[in-house]
Structures are given as structure tokens and as C-alpha cells.
Image (cartoon, rainbow, N blue to C red):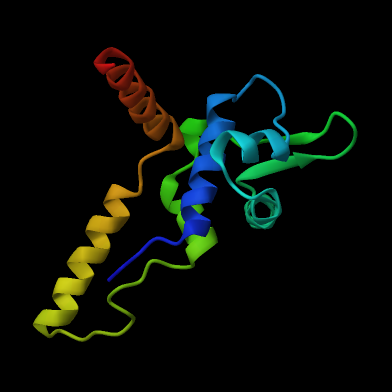
Length: 137
């Protein structure tokens, strides 16, 4: 079964928190960790990878913290997943033309298409879910 690791789920949650606060200053890792119930040391390791990939920026010092390196509309979920999971390659390289290879290639394209949405799009989905939950209570 294809699974997305907890590292990627935590990474997406944390980056989405940064997207929610985009343009409002820096967020500290302890606050992001607490809000999303992510172990702070693990989140630090995840953020190190995302900083190296230029998805987020780190500012050191007393008032330091993290922010997105680009606007949420310019960062795709697939970028984050590929940094944290590696390439999402189901079909493998080569020119195998059998039915299984073709099926895996189609699945890979569908995954890439699904995960190509921006953080802004994902944030809009999350806000919509929050509104539904608020009204259903």
C-alpha cells in the first residue's frame, strides 16, 4: 500500500500553519509544534529539510522563527512531499510498455495532479472544513 509518512503529514500541517500566518511575521517552532501536536525535535528535523529546499525560511535570534520562502499560492504540496518523501515514482524509469507499467504510470500522473495544488488552495479547503465543523456543532 502506498502511504504518506508521518514526516510528510507533520510537514504539511506545519507548513500550512505558516501559510495561515503568511505576511504576519515569524512563527516559532514551539508554537507550531504545540498547535499541531508535533514533537518539536522532529519538527526541527523536518524544517531543516524544508529550509534547504527553499520552501521555508529561518530567522535566528531572540525574535527568530520561521516563515514561508514564497507566497502560499507559489508553493505546491507536491514540492513538500518530494522533499520529505523523495520522488513519487510509481512506474520507474524505462520504456516498459506492458499493462502494469501503463497502469502505474497513470496512477503516478493522477497522484501528481492531485498533489499539485498550492498551499493557498489547501488552506482554502481547510478553512471551508472549519466553517462546516463550526456550523454543525
